[in-house]
Image 1: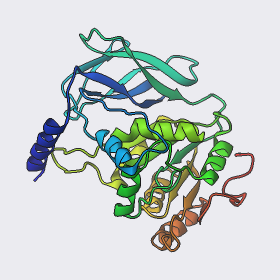
Image 2 (image 1 turned 90 degrees about the vertical axis):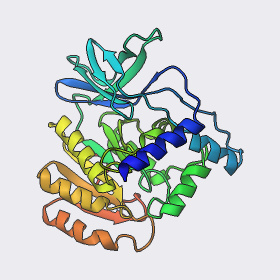
Image 3 (image 1 turned 180 degrees about the vertical axis):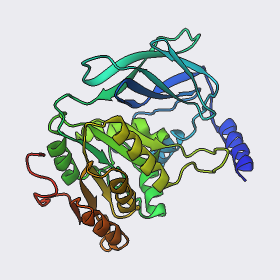
Image 4 (image 1 turned 30 degrees about the vertical axis):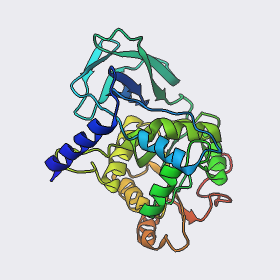
Length: 327
């Protein structure tokens, strides 16, 4: 089945895209104890039209659909600081370069496609500050941004008929993230099942709203050898949480999500795997009654000594969950 789907995917892309020279598209990377983890993708077709807040839903649809018509280029060597890695079949590449001593904040590393005459691309990785008190791992859809991800039809409608100027970040999410991040002192990481094709779009939405910038752990929804849409929602989020916590052994974490997409189960499992590393689990209830399926997992989390809270809003959280000073 996956072989047939892959053939269909390639045929559709070939019919709709306009290819050009390979381009290295950088994503926001992160830091491990000894390395900067640089993440990017090599494609030969990139479409990014400037949005207009008054443009029609049809124009929004065409612009959003164009983000998914990527022409990925596999088996391409990419080099940064004498480290070379080759892109996979979907064009993704991850480079681990030595982490500079005493580096903090966003560190920029020039990278390029080996043999290309184009100017190097700036790839960035976030290094937590030495005085960071903790880290924050947050879901995106229906946690930071109103999406309707719990309903597939509504999610697709919201995704494809809006643009970076019309998508809404919850004001209470902005307030909570400002409080927890403490003006950049504490690092923020975003984990979502949204596809990597939306990385630039999501960054624009977050930047416009004023959300703290952080590495995003998104999902490849292309066709792989064993799956039509890549890792499952739960597996993808769990693996991303693992990478973030393992990369930051000195930090404990707040986990933010919603009750509509099994975040309680993902975070319960993380609490089990990392005893003592989770400060609290905070979930939004996007639709009244959607917390029912999360209650059992939340009770298990509480039984392990981790405070939990779920509500329609992140405003007025109990002090035991998120103290006013973020301590």
